[in-house]
Image (cartoon, rainbow, N blue to C red):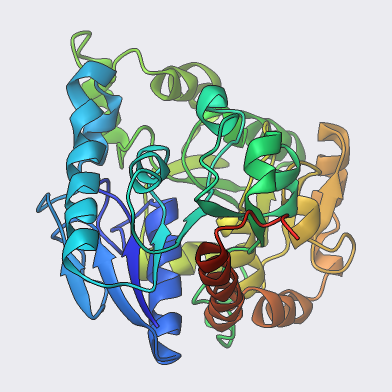
Length: 380
């Protein structure tokens, strides 16, 4: 099979730190290539992921420009996707696996090209006008059943199913001694609920480490510079205001710490040595990469019962699911009752790259068959 994997123009693959979609692509492509799939990667030029070919428009990622007004950045995704369209006219591919939000399927649906599978990584309440009139020629998959359940009818009718996210950490032997800290790993924003984690851990006297960028800003010095400059593009950004107003009051440098964005070995060590991973989500998380990473490292996840979490965590065996903040606090006191080995075994069985790749190969075959027949997934 010969496929075009469209990661988009925002971050290199793999990303140096935070980068949800790019991490998914970086996890999937090696497993596909191990199974004999030829992969042409459409991403930015600084991508280092091994692929059969790399195609790019921009030498570096354009993620930072997403914070600018729409009329200043609207051409970035379109410039990237125009090159994808040119490539499809120049070459023969069996399938396009697309990850570029809205612009990807909008352009691909207008081409007389190979079948397309578009992966939905985000909140499907966005882009109601587009999702509500989804192009019938584009097959989709979600990253959880909970995500697809909230999709508009036209989008759900084009769905081939859900594929849970995976992590290369699945199957590794324990590397880090267990510490006392609790960790929240991910972008600092109101939807992730870091202020709730800080409040709970402060009340319980549990050391908490918040790890993740604020609006792409990787550390305190960068954030301080933005806050000190009223003319900076990010000065009034909701995530910056959230960190300043809701998170900073809890930061004492001792019990509650923010370490900024972390990556590589440092990230694995911080995560893998945690006593628990906390997910006080304030929205219906569609994918849950950080959850499967915690499981793979043998770190029990404790979260609110929202979005995809009930699909990923077996309450009382591989983690805890709470309905209230008070329950969240109570379950944190019992994480030592859970077996880290059960968490790792669950990740190996359900969230390894090979499992995800095999599931995608099933969906690729279904999308190709659907494209040949010109059928929607629900057609007889």
